[in-house]
Length: 355
Picture 1 (cartoon, rainbow, N blue to C red):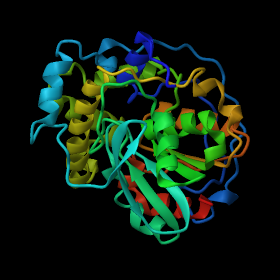
Picture 2 (tube, rainbow, N blue to C red; picture 1 turned 90 degrees about the vertical axis):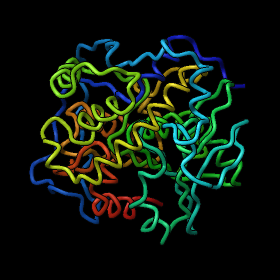
Picture 3 (tube, helix red, strand yellow; picture 1 turned 135 degrees about the horizontal axis):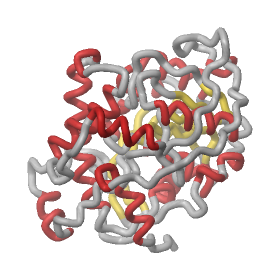
Picture 4 (cartoon, rainbow, N blue to C red; picture 1 turned 180 degrees about the horizontal axis):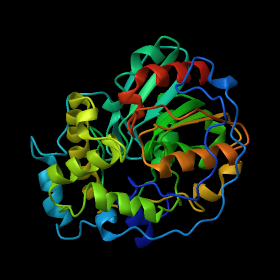
């Protein structure tokens, strides 16, 4: 039985798109490549240990509590054609733990499940599906409530949905590839259901139980400022500036098609978060951040060089604490949606790593 989430858990679900920070640890070793080559396994694993650092509780500006709109009013808007949460297209769905989840399934070989970022949906993997499907059975999932997946008003856990998807598809074990929040779901799945996960590839990942740094709050203030959380278009524009462009670049430095696509996906994701705020979403207990040493499967960790410093630091920590982890050098001129922005090095690293 899936436990009912506490109010604190539900609040953390609403702010999950902001993985949180820890202390600075040493970055790439001297002589490391500036991009991801084909031999990702040959890269040295970072041995830095994470030091303790002051943490803070996310402000209301970041936690984005959507209490001013009733769930009933939202669900009516959610089903209205053309609304941010409306279904994207006619897609394949399968019942998982009482919900119809949308997914794409292509290729043959050892199975790989792709888990999207909290500001996106399964479409963010459009540059990975073809190359990976040449060697693997590739399944790109819309997490419950996102994209084309449905959201019944019943308690659930994302990590149990991933295991349930494998059950529904008759897959005993699979590798998981996650970006941002999808990486956090992948880690939680590997901890809750270790017998189901053959490998983890984590790109710009979050981790449950991880706390933001004060530096990240300051960056939000300087890059975005105050945004009305009920204005999905303005909120998405601010989040894309914060995440996809990043603190060290200007919007003009990034492909405009990528920015437009990211804003469109994020508007739908914002609607998903509003719907999810009315549902009990259970999280891993105890959370992943204190259990990284339990990840016994091979783990690949990467981040974009233009992403928030917090993201790279978390990648360093995971690589230091997971026993069989490989830390890829940060990819230059790449933000938070690394698989979309720099598909060539991402695909090369994944093809070299995945079993």
